[in-house]
Length: 239
Image 1 (cartoon, rainbow, N blue to C red):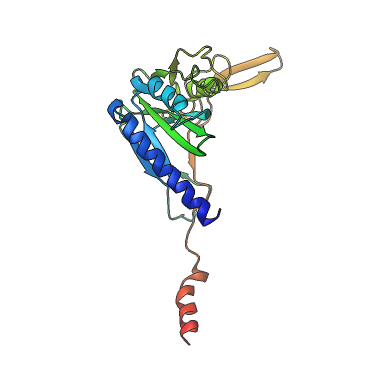
Image 2: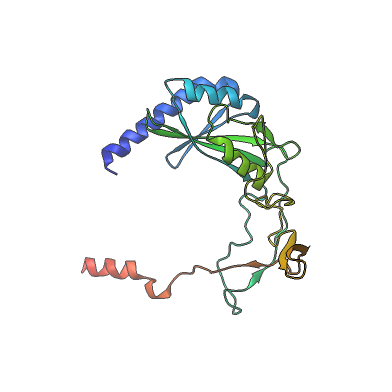
């Protein structure tokens, strides 16, 4: 990407941010700008109003919805996988499970929408928080039909419900699946085991027979071969 096109993109993002701030601040929306991206956090009761305006208002013209996904913010920023050292037991070791952080019940889950304006060549992310007790938000299928299967996926994996969806049912997990596998409190070993029983000529479900264990695949450490290389290069240059 040339410097000119990068500057043009930055100018479009700044223009978009200003238009969003002036148009939706009264609706309780907040704006986030980071890493060259713009995110509009929308109260769930105003989602449909905001979505319709983003699609129909010529200064926005977000004709396309690219993706809808769910997010579980429980234990956000807390990882039992993060480590800087490895003991003699090697890389296939297990680490002790961490005590889960107390989740924010009001803002634990979020539905995230990625929009594209072909007319203005700019992208926008919408984030709508929902609470744990009633993780429900309006379906945007009437605004962007492409949201249909995306919302079903977010429902299946996170348990976020989309009011008014024309066919809200699971799309990835098996029939009769219990729980939502992308939630942070869903066990990594699953709820049940399944196998094919040749005598019964069908798939049978049984209790899980393995213990939960977190594996750390690798640890990135400093390579002693390259320590001090910058100083040596600098000394050679000075000479």
